[in-house]
Image (cartoon, rainbow, N blue to C red; front, side, top):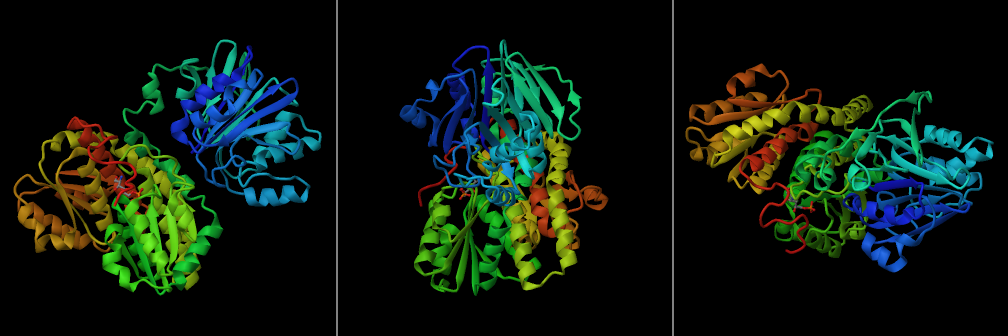
Length: 607
Ligand code: M6R
């Protein structure tokens, strides 16, 4: 997730406006920054690696001349954070400048094709193919707008783009597919940005671009067209009444809620991984004699779920281990034949890195899954995968958890393929299912938002919760419990439901809420038995069920419904969503700020 901004104005010196607006987008990415403007027929560009203030101190982002320009603050996906990979990117002759937020999935093919045609590339980014594609189309005699239009037709993946060119220096061309892009309508100036706060101090009139739309901005007007058939779209600006702080959270009261709602988009990005990394990692996992999945907190719960995925799909036994226990628990079993897959959103968690370091010293193969390019985990891993969820600001992990699961599910399928354990037809059907997950999550959020508020209101004063699931839903139960506990400070326990009668059931007395995770899988009959045991002792049953599961509905005091159509093995991705919402509303009901739970930090860099 990056932040893009563009400004075309009647007045000169847009560079300062771009700089200030990028600062309001810095929460979207902060590993590098850049600006490009046009003046007297030439593009001026400044960019570098680092936070905006640091880069500005070194190269003064405000002194680019001109009344038209674009800017970018980066969250690296393709290519490490560096000056050369920072946006804007140019064509061969420095006539076209582009900033981009999103992922161009087919960039490798396009790059090879353009290199064959003589284009030379400077960066390792996917974005750089765009100015070169436009340049190539211009050679064929197209106008700038048509050249952009033809280029857009070739792009697969997601994008929000702002493009300027010395060929037609009176306009910014923008386009959107999946990544957000909003126009700001000022007095004598037009803006485009990834997010409303970027231009809110300049104007409160906003036009939200829809998917597959192109906008052309002049300093005094704008035009929107549908990419598909180039028809005009008439859309008047909306008046934004948010404060700057509300706008940064896109109108959500907290980052956590915003990030819960960002899950469909984050999941779509997690489906856009490059095959070579998945295949390479799958090969290492297949070859290893023993595989450890190592992580802390929420990331550990993703590992636990993954151990079921690897076993059920690929018949590969793996050992999920809490990172701080790894050396003591498994240290002596680590050797040159071991693969350790470390999962860490931040890539900086000290306990996880200590486990990795230990394994490296014993010649094990280190594989990493993280959300942060350039993090320590990416540097110490033999192969790493970036989950591409964008920055997560709320301390409670939400969108990064579901994305980790989706990446791990894809990895398990790859290993299954290598090992020939699942027929190619089944693999195809699983892959189709994975593609549907973002939509299912979207539906599930909508369906459960109000419900989560109501149920939280009802149980806000409960002093203890139990979370129970069987099979892979044990991981969902553990994660649901962690979410509730860490932000609303209600003591809670989570167990595989089968364990409850070996101890935890003694805590149950009338009114104790017991949350059951109940996908329609092989464990359903036994989980119904466990619900009955709890009911008999007076527990209040809150279930997470598949839509239309009347039998469990009847047994429950309250229930959340999750859309069907997802196999048991992927169910944690959808079943956790109502529990994230429930935890969030419990914290709000109890008067706590879910974004800043006491005593916790987003990245735990001490052991
Ligand atoms: O950055 P990591 O994934 O390594 O962080 C691990 C845990 O600290 C983290 O998952 C923590 O449990 C969550 N913030 C809880 O919501």
